[in-house]
Image (cartoon, rainbow, N blue to C red; front, side):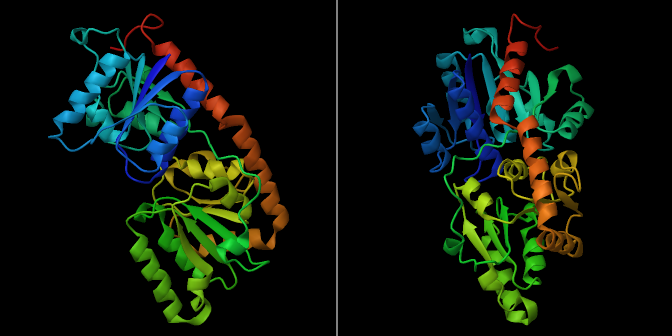
Amino acid sequence: MKILQVLAGGKFGGAETAFVDMAIALHEAGQTVEVATRANDIRVPRLRAAGVPVHTLPFGGGFDFYTRWKLKRIIRRFRPDIVQSWMSRASAAVPKWTPGMGIPRYQVVSRLGGYYKLKYFRAADHYLAITPDIARYIVAGGINAGRVHFIANFAETEPVEQPVDRSQLAVPEGAPLLLAMGRLHDAKGFDTLIETVAAMPGVHLRIAGEGPDRASLEGLIARLAADGGAAADAQARIKLLGWRTDRAALLQASDIFVMSSRKEPFGTIFVQAWAENTPLIATRAEGPSQFVQDGEDGLLVDIDDKAEMRAAIQRLIDDPALARQLSAAGYQRYLQEFTKQACVEAHLAFYNAIRVGVSADPA
């Protein structure tokens, strides 16, 4: 099967990482995959190193006619069976098939990892939602339920021989180590997490990620340290690691993974924590609350509730047996629902079902 994956994307982000993971997984499964995306010094080299052809396009605003023109040329040459667009900007640029293109009918699949405005997805023949609630949102927006499908992200982590050495992270031996990951953005709630940990003497936090809020988060850590008290050593205990490509090694080195998001339509990283047997604490954001079973495979806390978050962290520090129980249950959830094999098989079954000649074109 010939599949074109299309994403505009920012420099960093969870959706961007999932896009690369999915394109490579389909390629490794024997499919003929090409990618159209913005130039990027992280995802483009990784895709090309895996053997996936990449077309770099600007994906500008409404007056970027070049991207639309070039995408149509790429499609005419590649003659895909499936064109899958990710998020709003790419979906708005993808052309719907017409007989005048002179190529066999292809199906446009728009993947929604959030509650985007549906006006950007007019070319979609089918909609792929990464949570049941996003699927309900699409149907509520007037899309026929037969064109809406749910497939969760898989948790791809790189192979690793051993965890990151904690000494390289400047974590004293025996100190509890918390890890968070994600784009440094207000939606991730890292400010709340930093304020919570700053008030917990001896507890260390490392945040892996990059984004527009780096300066404000660094300023917050400095202000907390200047206030003294339990937070006087905040700059030694709380550090921003920048963008990292060693997710698995970081997770394995950590005692607890904390997902502090205010908004999180899915949040692949909590599944990656499950995949690496790392005890999980997550907020009751949209995504985690649909999957995490509180007290069984993780602990859920209210969004921006520092007291509840602190209590959950302390609970797992004080009760290693509970932490092991949660991580073991989370790992089983990963094996049952979120492996790469299961996700790729679900995508291929879906693609085959919607291809012309297998099922009728959507109305």
